[in-house]
Length: 422
Image 1 (cartoon, rainbow, N blue to C red):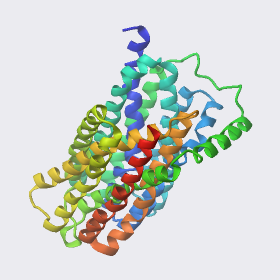
Image 2 (image 1 turned 180 degrees about the vertical axis):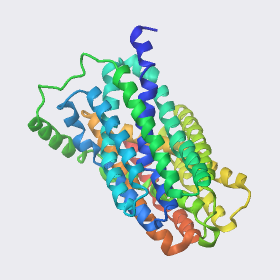
Image 3 (image 1 turned 90 degrees about the horizontal axis):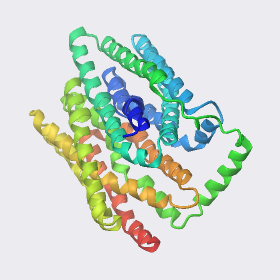
Image 4 (image 1 turned 90 degrees about the vertical axis):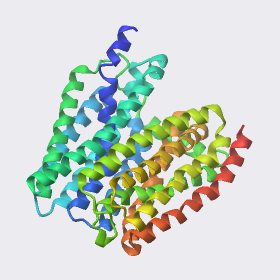
């Protein structure tokens, strides 16, 4: 093991933990649970937290400009400092009467900071490590990203739940939780300020200017939309996770809502354990097994089984909504089943994006694909709260099963396009 590889152990795990933690807080579970506990309606939660996906949707549009201004190292540390300060700002604003509007404004800014940190982090990883080292650490970075998800969706939520019980004040509990979060992110900033190396290649590219980037942008986007089977590809990107996009926004509110409202009436800490810990572990195992399976057979072979895996386990929430089991074990098993299926099925989605991105500008094409991937989560998620309040939880989860049909309907066309590409 050379010195550079030994040095990478000092920053790769912490850097990808720092990448995953803000994302899970801002764009996925934590903000949803917080606003639900603070009395915000499902319609408003889904609509406004759905908008927080936007920076990841449009990330490909500004990522090239990161190369023109400062170094990747500067962007990483600056964004982590900004996010730490922003989370502290959320903590300070939560006790105030206008907390919803003010904290959303801060989370909106932090979403752009987090997406920018993602760009700089991935760029720094490729700058400082050679191809062999990148391959060696790819599993390490994924593991610590998952650990960030477990910490954010699980441990952080559990802490908030116990603070709710201890303080008897939900706003105070979440304010303390966000102060803890701010302290962790600021500690990561301080650590990376000293632990990150200074690669000689990490400097602004003086040979590139904004005009050249815009010209390159124009060619890249036009060539992407001229790719063969582009219509089928876009439909697949937008529809493959349609039912999951609706489910993910309402899963935590369903667990937290009282049984009189059609929910399960779980305590905050139980939701943290169910969705943020057991669920993430099941998701990770599903992803690992999906990767093993697809390495032994082609994507064409596994595409339909994986599409069924990502859609049919949603029936677990229909079971929960209709039978409302008192035993938490049944809740944990239902969440584990749905998340395992999602992890297994998502493998096909990731591989398809890689295959479709092949070409003269593979990196840029893949960035555009991930933008559509985020859009496919953002748009359905934004209306999920309104639909849930209109239909009630039982009919909402039945609707989610109906929405698996578009996902499955596009699969034969995708398989045909893949066979023609081979």
